[in-house]
Amino acid sequence: MDIERHTIVSQNDKLAVRLFPAQGPTAFPAPAVLLCHGFFGIQDLLLPVFAGLFADAGFTAVTFDYRGFGDSEGEAGRVVPEQQINDIITVLEWCENRPDIDPKRIALWGTSLGGCHVVEVAARHPEVKCIISQMGFADGEQLVTGDMAYDEKKRFLNTMERMERKKRQSGKELFVPIIKVMTDEESRAFFERNKKRYPALNIKVPYMTVWEAIQYHPAAAAERITQPTLMVFAEDDKVIALEYGLAFYQAVAAEKHCHIQPQARHYDLFAGKHFTQVAERQLYWLREYL
Image (cartoon, rainbow, N blue to C red):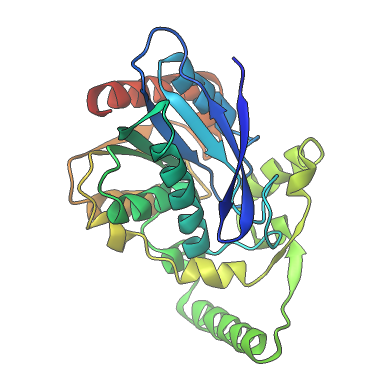
């Protein structure tokens, strides 16, 4: 498969985009799946296995790097949900204007933080045909502080508020390696394993990224979407606990289906039997609704 590389502009910064053309006999223009990665993710890691699967099944697949990550321009390492949502919308509009993509048959696919973003985008863009959300969460504050005791949470939030005020007043803030804002061992191990192979992961990021996550409440968008939505979760997820994902699913008011992959952890859905089983369900969903 000849993967196409493109560059588009999102609010004055260039975004790196990859297009995986639909393979085999397929409609022209082709239906498409826009894939959105998660927390500190880059498009060359994890996403290609799903993009290649969708392309082989007759769907054009599109991946990209958010501003500040991978091959895209922008301030390195800053995760601001609204900014990333705007990046997705920019790529979506680019897809809608391509002659080889059917603008009425575009699905949004997102994993982890991206699984939240795609619901936000679909709420604002009803022309999106359907949604696949992997391992998203309902509420950022719950995600970050859910395991804390009351007093610990109060102290933590007070500290974050002081840091946020200091940033606003002085413009200065703390930058740390990515693993310093990871609260779970699975993610830390994953990034340590991959940062040598993918140097774009070996960067420092604003610690205030944690504050941005706390302010993010994607369940509100889930209540507004109208598109058929498949949500996929990993039963043994220690990055985003299953209960936080199911709260996100419960907020969806549109036609929906939930799949919980048994005995799977957060990163297991991208390889082996877990990938095979989840991919089969996702392809069924796309063939049914896209």
